[in-house]
Length: 351
Ligand code: F0G
Image (cartoon, rainbow, N blue to C red; front, top):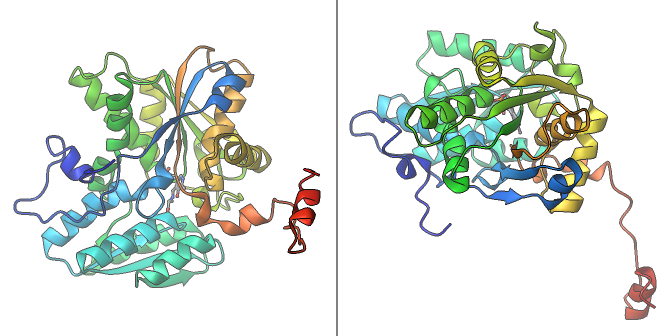
C-alpha cells in the first residue's frame, strides 16, 4: 500500500477533526483483506480475513488511537490514560510517543501477553499494574480521568470508535459491497459497535445496498453478552477479551439486533484449534483472541446458522507475535540436528 496516508487522511471526508488539529498518525489502516481458501472450503462460503495485525502496533486499536490521540493533542492536554488487556496499552503508548504526550496504562496483574507489555515498555509508557481484572482497571482509569487533567483513550472515548469504523469502510471499498455476515471477537464491545456504525454510514449514504449480519463471538469463560449479564470473574486463554462487563454493551446489542446477527460463546479449546488452523493453512498468525471470530465462523457454519454460499468477513484483531507464550506452548519441540546436509535430509525424510 505505497502512499497510504493513514486512515484519517484516507477518509478525510468522513472524519471530523478539531480546528487546526495536527494529525497523529503511524499510517495505520489499509490492512489486507485476504481470501481464505481454507475457510471457504471448510464452510462452503466465500470467506475473507481482515488482517488487523498488520497495523503499526499489531492490532486494530491503532485505528481508534490515531483519532483519539489527534483529539487529545489538539485539546492541549499533556497526558493520556487507558485500561487495557494489552493491545490498547501498546497502541496508546506508541501514539502518545509519536504525539509527545505521556501515556499511563492500567493493566491487570499477570494477565498481559508478553509482546504487548514489551511494546508499552519500549514506547515509554508508565505501566501501572493492579490486583484486579480489566473491568477494575477501566473503572479506575475512568475515575482518574474524570477528576484529574488526563484524557481517557479507551473506547468509551467516542472518537476512538470513529476511527474504528474505517475498517468496515475499507472492506466495502475493496469488495464493492458489504459482506453478508461479519464475524468479530467481542471483549469490551467497542469494535463490534464501531463496525456496525461504519456499515450503517455506508448504507445511509448509498455506498452499499445492504448491511451485513453481525456475528459477535466471546470466549465461553468470559461471555457476558451471550449470557445477558456481567461475568464477575472472567477467565479465558484469550486474555485480550477477558472482559466481564463490556463498556459498549448497548452498542453491541444494537449491532446484533439491528443487523439480525447473533452472540455466541466458543470454548478455549475451539479458539486454540482455530488459532492453529489459520496459521497452518492460511499463513496468518493471529493472537488467540483474534481466532475467536474464526472459531465462531466454524461453529455457526457447522450448525447451519450461517447460510452456505454467504460472503463472510472475519476480522482477526491482533498479531500472533503479541503472545509468543501461547504459540510455543502448543507446538512440538525444536529438533537438534548435526551440521551436515545428510543429517538434514534424513531428518526431513528426503533421503
Ligand atoms: N481482539 C483483540 C486482540 C483485542 O485486544 C480486543 C480488545 C478485542 C479483540 C475485543 O475488542 O474490546 O472492542 O470488543 N482489547 C482491549 C484492550 C480490551 O485493552 O486491548 P472490543
